[in-house]
Image 1 (tube, each protein chain N blue to C red):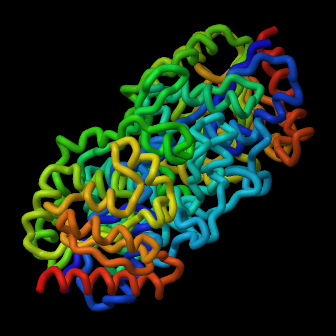
Image 2: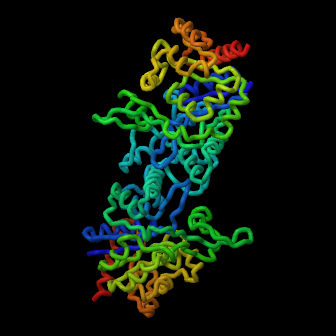
Image 3: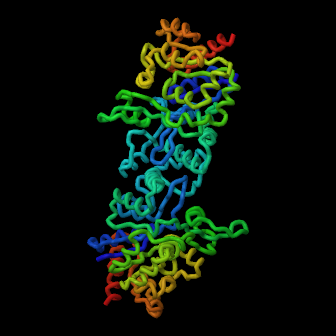
Length: 318
Length: 318
């Protein structure tokens, strides 16, 4: 079975670990969000791609969900001693090596997709990890800053400000000019099923869908497209999805997120058991829906979610 | 007193520490060799400038004479795990930060001289440290490799091969097109004395002198130019100066090195007490010479050497 998964960072990565457990023989292609990529200290950092790569490759810091395990911060301390910032983004020494290799390869002319493949040759994530695009896309968030509205990098909003101020708009700058990375449209066209993990529907999956051609390819693939709600009981399971949902005028409910994707794209939707009441609303919108436990507490629980999603896909197909 | 010092790496840095002890009120400008700079992992590494900066700024690894104290090698280990080399150049985590800051500033358009000044704002070396040039100069060494003569980067010769194969030529590639960095010629013109520490006469001081204008400025400054022999008893005190001296056809003796610089450039020369016999030969070549202890065993011994050099300079001036 060929499965395409659109993935953000932590949620997407944990979902993929469950997918590998639930369907070890599946041929999985992951289309990773690159909208939150950022240049720090002259180095290209791809937080979502790395989180997927480290998580599936056994190098992730399990507690925090991002960054390397057994990490140290000598380089960062030295950069601070030089007075060079920013200091709010946690780059560890082991993690730095990834960004150094990536930046060197990009400078040598390799596209991000080729660089990602090269990095994965070490990590062996067991999936084919593709960036959504080799072109630069950068998610900006419009916030009010001392009376002025200005656009800041998503990471500044998310990591530095911890989404503590209202987001008035979320714009994937450059997405309209970006092309899907090599292999992305082919993987979608050849997929047996497309899955949306419980990732952020705006800044993760939404950004991937903003690359011209990807949404259309998924809608036209003629295979089941099934998503899992990142909202459980009217609040994000993790992260701050509610803040950016508000920016795009979407309620923080499992049903509203499904309708935000829309029945033209989404065939099936899983909500958490506590959101049983949302099932009828989602189905009324033309999206098949089931209520099942959606907490990724461990790999087994996540694998069970994946099995529910694949079962729903088969139901859609039948 | 305004003193200009041409410096390589370890020997130059230790000499400068002695100079600061011997002449704490002197206004010292250091013209640093950049011919052994190297790009590693996409980062610009300036070993000699950093050795001077770290040594005078209190951050040097005292035992090895280069690199940072209390160093770790997490980044390097990770790069090796990615299969990215070279693995023979020892870059530590704290050291990496210096190269990251430097590379980022260079990419932003700052010349190396401005970058060096910015780095020194942290280290406060107590001297003005100038790269010999903002232009790229790269010392190459011609060696025989499986029957073919090829040119390799000086660091590959020095660090990877440990100068274990004959050097047929030493060429500071790009030096002929390089311009002295801002401040270099001015510092020489305003100097009261110019000192050549017991640095490598070919790949350190020789490279600096190969930048058009620098040798001429020193020769024309009309102030005493005094050097200290890096050869003691027919062998280099440290390093492998004999290997590169052979490549330029100069004997590894204190007297031969003085004559290699020449009386057109050098006014005074200190040889070690064990080379007392060389004094007459050097003086016969028109260079005033004294035999004194030349082992930089500690700061006091080095300061005594500096005082001898400054005394010889005054003798020349008188």
